Image 1: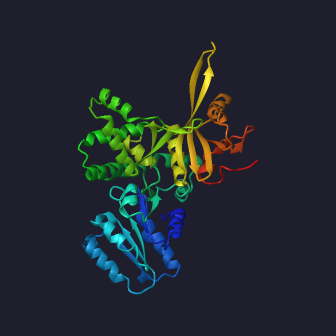
Image 2: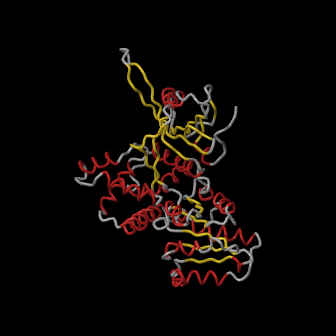
Length: 420
């Protein structure tokens, strides 16, 4: 099944001819190669670009093995620049070339070459883009398919069935070609074990394989919860009888983030306007990969929905923190105490800000008041939102809180900024 990736195509179109190396990054198997070699290349053809001016190089193809040598690659690209017209150089898996940065930097001043590359997450990471191309690398971050992008795959299924399947198996494109749940589960388990974790071990020469795997399993079981390397160290010591240190745990988490397997959401004190680095929350880039690590056992809808909303917000370009509101309160005896209320997400993009709560269900007035409590103690004018699963219709209540149905949110049927 061919999925439309219009959002990423537009990003590539916006970067055409900008004098920079366009680097398409993201977790493995998220569709980077397909985006470049099919969607973008087809766009260029539709714009009238001659086939001879679209230079496509798949470095994973054994037939292109000699082009993994940097000088051979340089010579080949030069040989394809046959006239002064603009040429589009599309290279897949650039990390297979030693000294690839020198090759790509050689084209920064070539006026008739517009260069686009993809790289495996384990070799061409987001942090590398900053350093390798002397400030001339322009990153396009590709995520797995969003729920809205996968909607054609869910034809014939109810809203609940579609949401349940997406939260269980995630959005890696190849899943659409697998007809049974058993095949999907096996694919995700093998991918997590044999691709992502193996890449990290091999690139960074991780010696304690078992500890890394155990850490991923712990993080898989704790999405939606606050986690710190020190707490994880204590767990390893008491439960796993391991001496894995907090420093090593932090390093492993950093590697998982660099490989786009995880993302970290830092706590933000809304009233105090300051960040609190630890503990933090960690969310998985793809829910199917998370579920695969725990054998699809822990299917807690509340936590999965929270991770789903986080991923959707990141796809839409928001930076996302975990908010907290600190209150000074008094107990029944009049004694003062400090109370901390949590806001699931503080989302920022430019001048936009939204405070968002994730609520799988609002069965009664008590639960509704509980979800609103932290939001109502935020006194600025930014929009407060509660995203709710199930049949709750989208509406704004009498105190201005927007209740947004999960389906409406994911399918873009209703924006945050609806008006009464």
